[in-house]
Image (cartoon, rainbow, N blue to C red; front, side, top):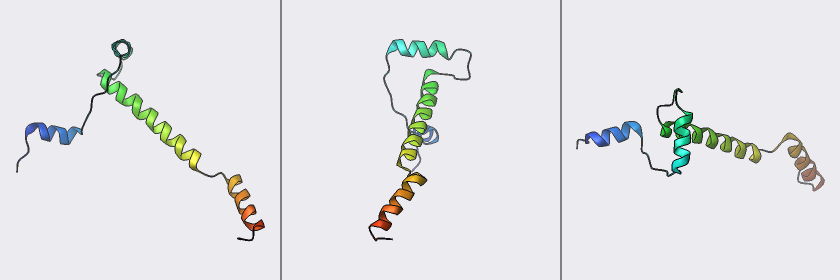
Length: 84
């Protein structure tokens, strides 16, 4: 079964959704990105959100990681309890 032109474009570009932002914010961003490499407000917002999400994911991962000091204290407690 052949895919339509629209389906081919969707597969190439990926799927998108719409997110609403206040018009005043949209206009501020539009002014901000003039004479930059960003060709649209959507492109800029996508870039910013990717950066924020990546940062938050890193923070979450770091907060879930046990420090060497915490590992040492856990091992000492386990030894005192006779598990090690």
